[in-house]
Image (cartoon, rainbow, N blue to C red):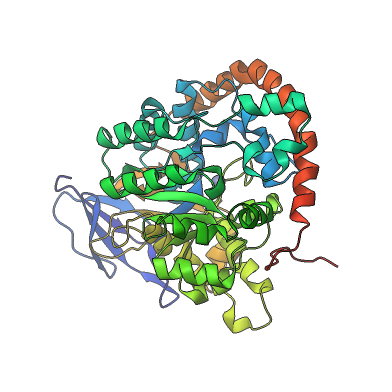
Length: 499
Ligand SMILES: [Zn+2]
């Protein structure tokens, strides 16, 4: 970046470590925070003044797990498990074109930045396999909105119906034939597409980088895991997988491999600091120690976990084991609002149903650290984002202190974590650029975006209706089968409130 200076004046700067919010000015040079000082901090001639009176300045939130492709399916599911959600993908994603991929990622990015989120890990899904064009389009959407992202193509080598022991056999014959047509793309082709995309990635990787997203451990065969591991190593790419998200998955792993999913991944040599495990609900204590030893990060996605009835992740135990636990929203079809403040509040409060010793519960400041610095570490940007400090990228969220969540301002961190619903987000700077100003996205014509989205879903409607009719026949079998499957004994319990 050129030597363009901006000086953010008059705001109160949140200090998570000391739980204070004193008045401070921030000098930004290009895309980097150059200096922080008391009100009236000197700035070079010509520095652009960003007025921040009545603003509470906090680091941008880092979202450890979402799926940008699903935003066009917002609100399309109600009561149902993860397995029923996976079963619905063929219809919620039906008619999804190349243009829709850009549009969906753009809609996701806009919603996230308006909610104070400045970086995300997007496990972007294209069916049945990723495409270089689709990944580049998703990346372009984040670039155009001005948000940071890791785009990790979601991939598998077997479909849901083949991945759960006994499910395929429980389907009537005609539905087995349907399940056969819904198979995942061949792993070798997906790997070659990813290699090509990694090699030719057109976007600035400090802004939007490409990762890999082998979706669920037992939905990918061993050779595919090895290929992902080697490709990630070759290109220094981040990987994300959904780890032990549901009890069905944890039980399936025991039947398939005679070991936990975490142990299975370790046997494939994929556990390492470049892996972000999404959800990580049904882990044993040994699994947690294994993830900690290998330096794996976890993205805790509490709204999704509740909405899909997946269970309550043992965040207190994971943190105690030494795992870097970040926070994520997950996607519009299971955590509809893509609201990192909501996810952070839930992460904090759900830590408090995990035992009677309140000193083990998360404090608000710890939850906010998870949503910022821990997320930065998970996404491979530790030391660059997640804090407001000299040398860090200028990713700064400015909350409106006139919002009633902050009136009166007693304990800023408590009020952010327990009261903020994202309605207080007024301005958002990412990489030194004002991406949100006075509550509006500056980089996107929102009226056009809304119209384009409405036109896209209208066009998709017939394809969706036809696909829905087909796969709802499967849902009738998948739902009860998986509920019965999950009723089996398992060494850990992550459901709560049972009598
Ligand atoms: Zn997910």
